[in-house]
Image (cartoon, rainbow, N blue to C red; front, side, top):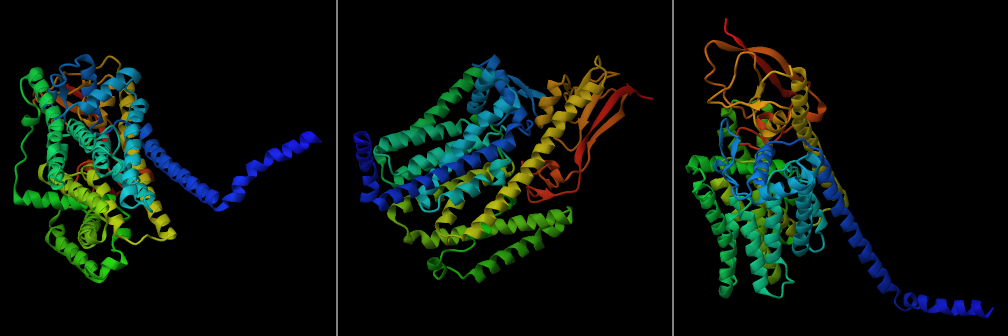
Length: 568
């Protein structure tokens, strides 16, 4: 009995806190569960994006990146001196556009774990996770009470989910996000440390893609606006990183890589074309834009009525259709998608302008600083792409959809639960169908490379044309890459030609030989590829005549096998 009484008295102190402060404990429990829910959602976003990319065949620019990485393993101190055939003929690596920081990372990872799809895509998934976390942290500053929704919508965007591959753009986005998060985050006590970090992230971004040069200019402009003149020296951090890289280039192959980029001729017509293409890409990858097509109730009365905005957008789209679409020699379906995407892009742009300009004065000083940085982000990223990109693509717009969506989310009324569920489902569904279609298209070349080489004579010389992911798998299966200006074709050899791909032009074949058709490898139409990203690689390079994605009943373009025979 005494032992039981002692146990009863021992239980009382455990119950006292609940009796003293039950409301406080309940509040803490709710907060804890909410944070756990947010963590689970972010984890699910990462798993969704990673699952679609993990076993995907190498695709588009992946092969070029992998071949550079393999060269770096052999010659780590001479990264630009290797040879690569990426435009029809073998050329030095330094003729390509990108610096090598990301390729060194691929080389190190590949040396440890091999160059298989799963380990290499796992490396990419780390950058995917970094993008998700950093976007959420920035969203918590801009829209503290509703950060999860814009984060989920952004990370479910087709430009982010479908375009991962082993491309540079997701790693580059993670560095841009880190750059702006460090600038926006309020918890930095040392301004020196803040700008040293931003300078480092800007330098790393520039060493992945030179299109990140605006970050250094933004850093300089922001320091001047904030009157941090004593910290102007931090801008020298990305500058010194580029100078060191340029000195390395000179020691490697006798020139400066960044200064040797091919100049892009400027014309007003080209500027208009690129601007329109930019809006088309923006409209194609933000299917949830209708949620942002209205300012909050306080701003609505101060700017324009919704009816006026709709009228402006519709008239602009009609004007675009009247001047441009009827001249195009493309299908009616293509025209419809171009019109829809352009209209959506115009709607997003106008709403962004109205909301930001009208709502600026209603924000607190701390958020004004964040909004200023996001606005500079959009202006710098968008203008640099339009002015200097050789072509437009959804991945080029990816860099600015984070600030665009966060700026819009700051000035809209919170949607209802039903509306949130609907737009999340729409965005995830679009990314899923486009992701599956792109996965199927890439896998076609992986499978056919194996089948073609297996069915041809083992002792025969088999040459191939074409780049992208196909180049990797053709080489892995023992085929030899054709040189466009010096074809090595002898009588009895085979030539494998994938249709509708970035191909070498077959020239200079001796007059006593001809190409005789042997077999055509096809893939029948499937609902898996109904939402198409493939025709002319539209998702990875589009313009005013090519929508980034479309619905299509066409099968994947075939692969044709020829044999070199004597000419009759």
